[in-house]
Length: 215
Image (cartoon, rainbow, N blue to C red; front, top):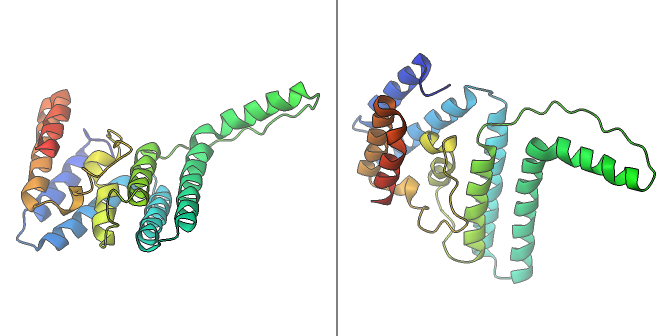
């Protein structure tokens, strides 16, 4: 689903109407989460499982990091999260490069090996949401933020569709961004307003959206 398609226009109109209905804020957040999953899965539904895995992994790791006091266990959990996240990223983005590099390295030792040719489809936004959840886990490990109690809030924070495939990637320390999913409804309305401007104004929407988020 691309931003200039009829399907996105219909999708966005439905989401916008639902968001401005007199529902409780938690219902609106749930609607945004489901809409974000529909938007991401429209291109390749199986990749939703990858998004869910990363989301659940760092949600549970973050919750455990907030409860544990043993620093060795906390560090081990952080390393587990980082290895799992970066391992998935390496698999999808750099598997061919790593195999070719291994072939060259083995050739230096006189070992001839032809790596298999992998047809790996790169999931859209995998770098963004992987580093997004990693940043949260690192911040919880540093005790810069408290783990979120609501999985719904964390899910919206990770998967909110206007940012999921557009970026930019959050900085490593995301203390100032974790409020995104629990803002007052007017903030979400401001984000939607910025994206309506994007549909009509092209490239000028990016700084407009940034202004609303930083306000």
